[in-house]
Length: 466
Image 1 (cartoon, rainbow, N blue to C red):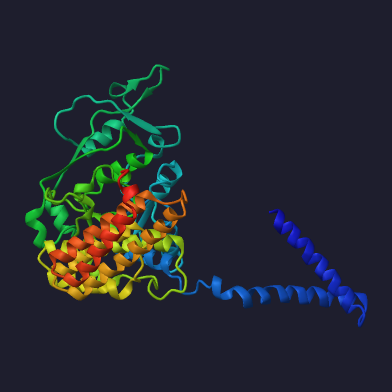
Image 2 (image 1 turned 30 degrees about the vertical axis):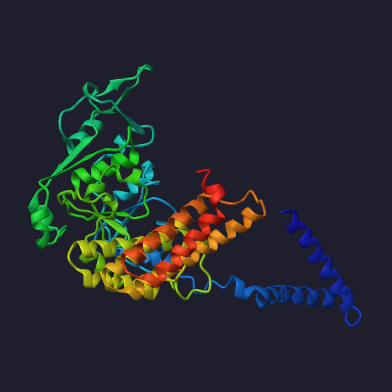
C-alpha cells in the first residue's frame, strides 16, 4: 500500500506542475481546471494504450462456459450439490443473470451447514420447487444438532436411510445419549445405510432408461464415510430419505470425495456432474467415479457443451489451465472409456476427435500428461494412429522440456531441481515407449527409447538415490 501513497503524491505534484505551466498562458482557475482534466484523461488513455492487450479478457469465457456445462449436464429439475467457489459462483451468474437452467436447484454444501441456508432451500427459487427437506426449523437451527457423533451399536445389516434419519432427529431422550456435562444429544448408531428401490418410482420419473431396467438394483446399500453427521449431511439424508426419485440428485465432478458420503458406487458421470442412479454396482470398475451413463454423457458433451474459447482465447488464467483443463481431459477420457465399454467405439473415436478439435495442446502438469498417455492408448486402440501419435508427441514435448530444465538446474548445482518431476518424467517416457512399441509405431518408439537412455544417463546419480 505504501507504493500507492507515494505514487499518489507524485501524481499530485504532477498536476500542480502542469497547472503552474498553464498559468503562463491563462489565469489560475482555468489552469487548475485544464490541468485536472488533462490528468484525468491522460492517465486512463496512457494505461489503455500500453496495457490493454496484456489485460484484455474479452475472449476468456471459461467461467461462463464451464458453469453452463455443469448446469446443462443435469437432468430437468435436478438438485445439484456443489462445494467450492469455482463450481458455485459462476453457476449462480449463469442462472440469475442469463436465466440458464433455472429449473436446477444449486445447493452449495459449504453453505448447507448454516440453518439459514437450509431454510432457504425449503422455499421455491426461480423455476425450482422447494427441496424435499422435511425437518422443521427447530430441529436444525443453530445450536441444535450441529454435530451428531457416531457410536457403533453393532446394528446388523443395512438400515434404511429414512429410519436412520428419523432416529438421529428424534427428540425422544430414549434414543439419545447423555454427555458428561449432562446435556442430551442424538448419536449415529450405524454407518451402513440403504434405500429400498421402488422400480415404478425410478422408471416413472425417468431416472434410468427402459434399456437399463435389467440393471436396476433392488436396494442401494452403502457405508457412510464420516464419524459424525454435520448439518449439511443431515439435510442431505433428509433429501435422500424423502425424495422418492422425484427429482434427479447430482454432484459436480469437482466436488470432494468426502462430500459424497459413500454414494460413489451409484454415481454416474453425465458430463460435468455425477447423477445418482440406483443401478446394480459395477464391481469390475476400480475407479467408481469414472463410471459413465455413456450415451447421455455423449449427447451432453458433443451436442450441448461449450468450451470456453479454450483453443482461441488470448489469455487463460490459472483456474482455466490447472483446474478446468484437467477436468476437460478427464471428462473426455472417461467418456471414451465408457463408450467403448458400452459397445460404441465409433462414438468414442468421435469424442477423441472432438477433444482434439476444441481443446488446446497444452500440458499444465504431470497429471494431465498422464491422462493424455491414456488418450493416446485409446486412439491407438481405436485404430487412429495419427491422433495417437499426436497425443504421444504432445506429452513427449512437455516431458523433455521439463527434464531439460531440471538437468540445467542439476548442472548448475541449483537446489531447486525437482526430483519428483525427474522421476515421473523418465517413468512417463518409458511408458510412452511401451505404448508406441505395443502399437507398432517403431519410428516414434526408436526416438523415445533414445530419449529414455539419454535421460537415464544424465540423471543417473539422482535416480540411483531413489
